Image (cartoon, rainbow, N blue to C red):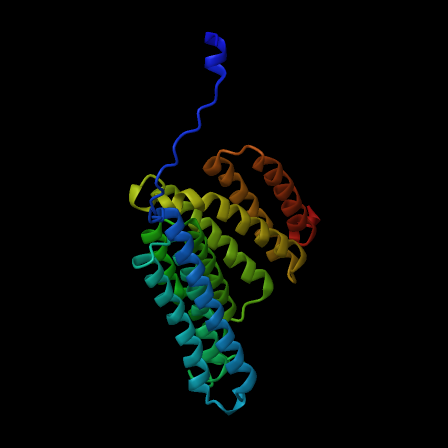
Length: 285
């Protein structure tokens, strides 16, 4: 046979001995297995909790037991978050459980007032109900701040800012002010926070918070302005609120570097001046 024919001949290789190789899991596969087991455990917990709520008589529990149950749920979420992070090494799942536990903190404080465990004054229907709201907003700030620092989480930074803002709103409401003076206090609060930010924006220790302050104060200022524009009683005080808001928007132009704020400043200063002149002694002039 020729050389080309020899090259085309197919040689069947001898069968090799098959050896059983034990499969080793990659780190990603181990993570997925841990996540699956954790989700299964979570489903079992939810089923047990739903079964307990469905078959038990909630009304037969004392007020202390009801609030205690809510506190136990928060502690349970924190415990699962710690276990997930330290043992199972699943960062995102641990973060999710930390968020769930943190959201239960204001609910726990609210339940104390709802069931009257803090006395008739600090109850939902008592005279100190706004102070109760302030406590429910301010006390979790410590936990939110610590989580924001330890986890470097933007979400917990926003939790901190929102809680402080709500706490100030409840504090102003506790003085039973008229609606115009309430919004005047909120605008002064916004102005003070902007001044504090301007003084502390270069500190590296709180850089995580200063980065998120500008978006937060923009949202807070816009919402406060919208509520203030439609909810007012005294038009003279209302005009001062508008002028103060215009000044705050002017400062925001320098703080945030966005020149678009001068449009809102111009509208607010003209509208505030109109309200002041139209409803005060300046109208005679």
